[in-house]
Length: 411
Image 1: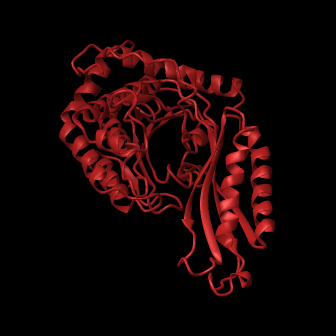
Image 2: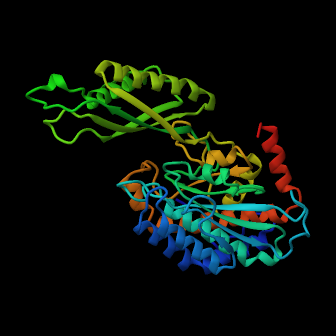
Image 3: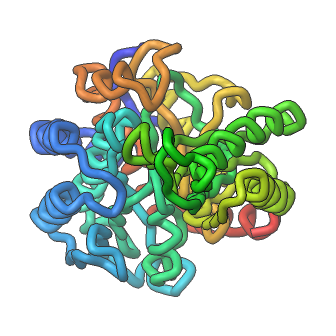
């Protein structure tokens, strides 16, 4: 992994301003990295990120942002806004300059902690906001910091979209840590599926015939899904865990609960997956004389990359000696950042914080997210996001070019 040299000459255009942004990130280095490590040490699940949300809200408020916390209907969502002092001098989408969204995530994985490195995403988003605040005198438009809860489960950004928190924003920028550097992003559309089977309790030894075994239904469902995978196309995924399977070995379980995720690289294929999944649940219930309930929630969309912005980020990255690789279609996950990308120009680049081959959502990746290498990447990501945002503020026509591409590709 190439070391990050913050003194390297940034890419044109606006290299001098970008150098000052890099310097502002370095000036706030201790604050940014302390936040990353504090969030890492105090992991909170989706929709429960009360400490992390409070910490990021306090951080951006210290640097001049007008902060709403909670923002919208989610108690752990944050919005901070800071108007550029030159508002009105640069024509943008609303006549007063563009509104650029700097995003952060901070939820952790149940039982694992920050195995997806969201602590680095929170800290880098705050760092980019701090850097942009330092040059607000030069900006026409508005910096909009959005602290986004519940990426791992529940699609918090979709709730924020529904709440209008992205209204009027001209671009959304968010980095993601990984084991490889890929500026372009592809995402599988995904949905959460909760399944509950209900049967009838009975003594498992003396009169098992009097019961109806909800756990048997769940076992049949998992077996059916395993067979279904043979016919799934390469771009589709189904996986799940058992949440509840009974209370004692000598009691026929009258309730069994599981949570699944279904994923596809093709948004339209979800209709077929829905129907098939419901049929599998119905078949398992019929086979065991139980009742099955299926609840779909938390949909995340596929990603609409904005190449106009991707190329700007890539050029800024290259100035620090980093290069990215072509996106690996076999190494793909899901994020509600895809939902944002369906509404406005969006990028979601990945920067490597560890050696290639360290799997995400693992203890190894969790540990890597608090190592010195991850710290340097957090600062690099803050710098690159701030520099790319600066171009959107300072270059006449760039936001409009991003919007033209967005609309031309069906947005």
